[in-house]
Amino acid sequence: MNLSYQVEDLLLKHTFTIAHQSRDVQDTLIVKLQDDARIGLGESTTNPFYGMTISNMTECLENVRPIVEKSGWETPAELWDLGKEIFKENPFAQCALDMAAWDLYAKKCGVKLYELLKLDPAAIPTTNFTIGIDTVEKMVSKMKEVHWPIYKIKLGTSDDLAIIRELRKHTDAVFRIDANCAWTAEQAIAYSEELGQLGVEFMEQPLAKDDLEGMKEVYKHSKLPVIADESCIVEADVKKCKGLFHGINVKLVKAGGITPGLRMLREAKSYGMKTMVGCMTESSVGITAIAHIAPLLDYVDMDGAMLLAKDPAKGVVITPEKVVFPEGNGIGAEMVF
Image (cartoon, rainbow, N blue to C red; front, side, top):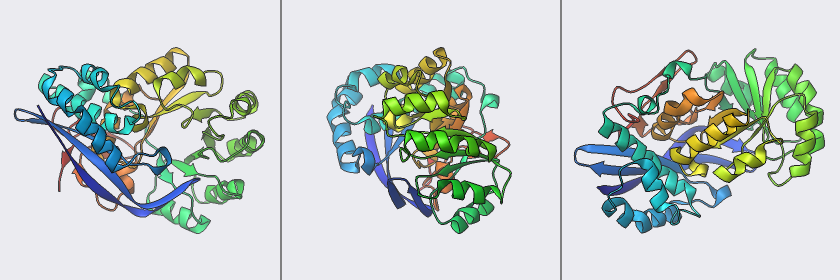
């Protein structure tokens, strides 16, 4: 078994802005696991908000190299458990390795990943397409550039309701809004009624993750369902979200990969909560991995590769009507340069 990795700079089509950051380029780490003639690919992007850098991710991978290459692990779950102490403070690096392990394992089994997981690709929900914070004119322009049935609108400004009112004039698409922790409980409750009237399906993470009392009030009084993101990062968070949110958005890179991500989704379902998986502007490597587990979901945000000016990989092709998987087994994504 051989572990290697490469760094890619993902140039975005447009500056992407959310409540706490903007970026034009997204750094990402592609991990490769090679055994005989097969190669498994995994990915994790960097993230300054969570302190995840190429440097600390590659340092973790070097620390786990002896376990990866010499321990004789067979399944992704075994490898995940073997490395969990090393990756305790760096789930992003663990995600890239875990994803590569699932790709390689499914290839060894001679099946696509969704087949290995006994999932039906016909059950994949339509992804939303994300519109970052910008001037209203530019946000409208982005919607006209990509006509889509569901838009996820990033908010967290002093004019959030005005933005949605104006965007609604230009499309009859479903809206989902994500405030990325920028609102107070009073704002979320007050906004929810008009947002519902404006065709918003749900609100994602309106409050800071430590505002538990505020979330109790929002959960009780909001006119819209509320989905946890920053409040649901790792497995232990799922139970904490019960009674505060109507559903969870699992980010594989934050959770530590597909292995814990699957457990989080199943736990949330056992509580009767809605499930979603979101992306972190990955290339087609990470996005294709998300697509394989998407049949488990009520909602999905896997538009990351669609936001790129140039994708260093090829994989799943996503349209509003369907998801077309690559021909190969495993995850099926491949690097193209």
